[in-house]
Length: 149
Image 1 (cartoon, helix red, strand yellow):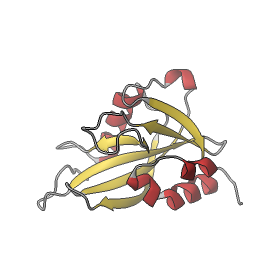
Image 2 (cartoon, rainbow, N blue to C red):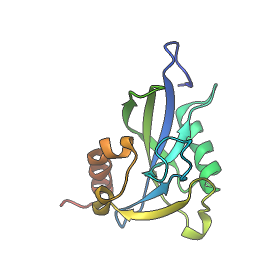
Image 3 (cartoon, rainbow, N blue to C red):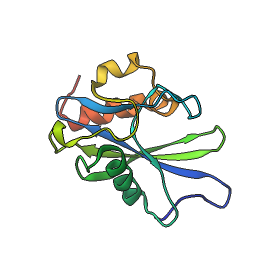
Image 4 (cartoon, rainbow, N blue to C red):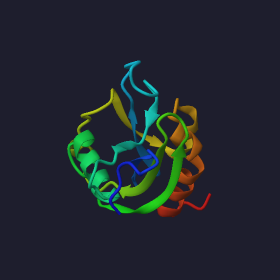
């Protein structure tokens, strides 16, 4: 599916739930620039879909731009969440099991990145989309890593 902006002005964005078998998720701390949305908060890697891109292609591009590489294959779409702010954005979330060493990951956007245990995610200053979808992230990582807590 090629998406960027639909006829009603809705933007589309892609986000990666990058995880490891130790139940940690790779998070990006956004820059502290007050001109951007949610400065300093923790987010998933990803970004806006550009004209002519399909969702997986957009996420692959974003991950290379933000991390310098693809940390693993982009899996199926896990879920969606709509930001009702201005502008409205339909976010599409995809699974990415990290298959590269930490040395291969280079932070090219944001002020920090960190592997956060899923049980510690609620303690962070999270962007609204991550906060709103925390139960989906947690459920997915637990199911994917064989944790049945």
